Image (cartoon, rainbow, N blue to C red; front, side, top):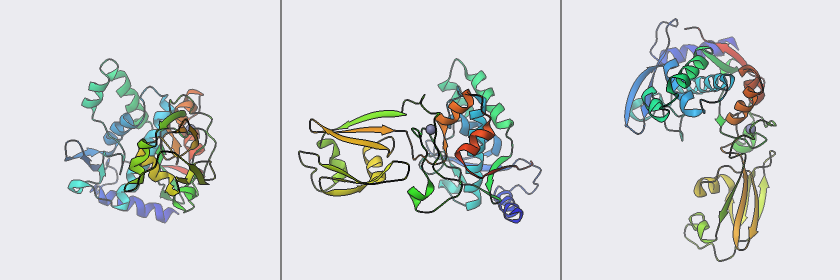
Length: 298
Ligand SMILES: [Zn+2]
C-alpha cells in the first residue's frame, strides 16, 4: 500500500518536473478559450478550479471538500500521463478534465464581492494543502457532479466495473439545487436528432428497458428503436439520466432528477452538508467510501 503511494508520488513529482519534493509542484494547463498553455503552482491552479467548479457562496467545508476532490482528480490525471493540446498535463475543458477560472476572470464575474469570495476559496485550498484521497495507497478517481437528486450512482452501473469507493449512497442534502427535480418537454420533432436518418414519426411510444440500481435509466426504447440513456442525455442536452417518462398530448414529458453523471461527490449535497455543520472530511467519506485522506508534504 505504502509502496503504491510512494510510486504514485514519485511519478507525480517527476511529471511535474519538481525534483525537490519539498517544493510545491508546478503543472501545465491548457486554456481552451485562449488556446494556449500556462504553467501554474498546483495550489494556485486549485484555487481557480474550486472557484470555477463550485458556487463560492457555499460553506467553507464544502469548498474544502471540493479542493480535495479537485487536487486528487488532477494528481491522478498527471500520474496517468494524459496529454492535452500543447502537451499540457491538464485542461480547463470540462468534457475531458475540470474547469478553471483565473483570478482576473473571477473578479470580472463577481464585481461586488470578489475579494471576500476569492479569499474564502483561498482559505479552503490552503487549509487542505497537499491533501488527497487515497484508496489502497493510490489516489482515487475523484469524480464529482453538480446534483445527484437524492441518490448517487455506482461505478459498476455506468462502467460495468466495480470501484470500491464509488458506490451508490443516499443523499438528502441537495434539494437546494434547481436541478434536484426539473422537467423537460419534447415534441416528436424535437426528438429528430436522436433518430438521425429515420423519422421519429408523429406519435411517441416509449418503454424503459433497463434501470440501474439507483433508479437511473440505462436503456430505453422510443418508437421501436432502442437507445442508451447516456446517448439520449447528451443528444438532447438533458440534465441527467434519472427520469420518469410520460406521454402527454403527443409530447414526451421527462421529469428529471439531478444534474450530471451522479458519480462520487454531489456538489450541492456537499453544500447542504456543510450548511448543517458537517466537516469536509465527513462530506468526502460520505460520497467516497473506505477512502483515507493523505497529505503530501510540500
Ligand atoms: Zn445529492
